[in-house]
Amino acid sequence: MNAGKNPALYLAQMLDSAEVIAEYLGGDVQNYRDSRLIRDAVHRNLEIIGEAAKRCPEATRAQYPDIPWRGMAGLRDVLIHDYDGTDPEEVVPVLTEHLPRLREQLTVALKREAFLAVLDKVPDAPPLPGDELP
Image (cartoon, rainbow, N blue to C red; front, side):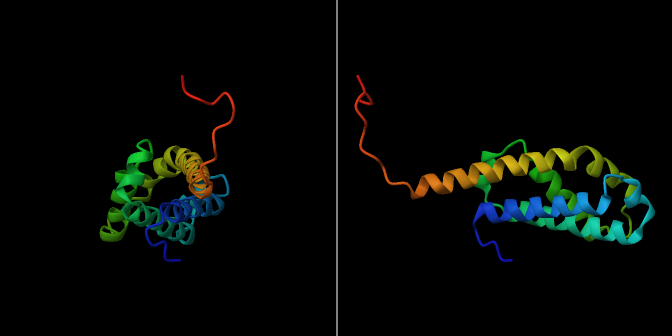
């Protein structure tokens, strides 16, 4: 999927990859430790999250300063460029501590973006009685 410049699509890609990672882990990070197949799949989805974070417009990143944009992009770079030197145990805190919070943050951001998109389509209504400014 080519997200273009629509920030909601980048946020959706990131959330989808975070949800897929949670599915792969099955609620137990030991699955990541025990299975090279799961590790590879998790790393690929972390790369997607990082790449989508890089592509998300700066204005959107500024609207959501609590989302760890640089951290996600940095992890993507490590996984891509230092693939043979990445210690899986260094990724575990990302999976256990940061990913659950990221999923929450992205869900909130996507809801806000959807609300703003609807507002953009609503024409300005005439003021109702009592709405006049003093």
